[in-house]
Length: 145
Image (cartoon, helix red, strand yellow):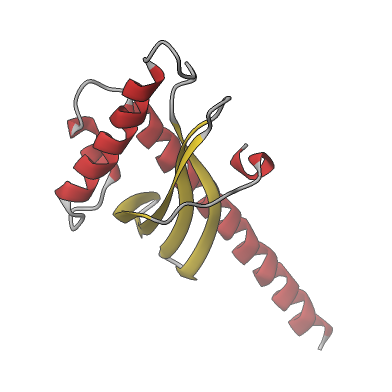
């Protein structure tokens, strides 16, 4: 009886550790996406998307990011560059996750475009299957850090 309880506790800790590693891998993919969005061309982003992902979604995300970037270059606007942030991660299955994110530009005139990512695990890495813009949210600044 005691061995069964100990085994359950050990297995649950291993599962939680795997989920923590998956969360870090997902956040790492989004950090990589942030880095690639600042590149001159959207092609380098393709390695972060799954083979089944729609290239039009990748271009829409690229265009959104660069639209915010252009707005920040206006003399009267905020100079902080836009960034992609991870707000929440929900696992639908061990290899599928919904990620609430946002393309944000903090500052005096904060801009926020909420995004929903569907991500899938391929081996050890997580790739973006789909990304969709959502309606306007009002998130507390603490959630965006």
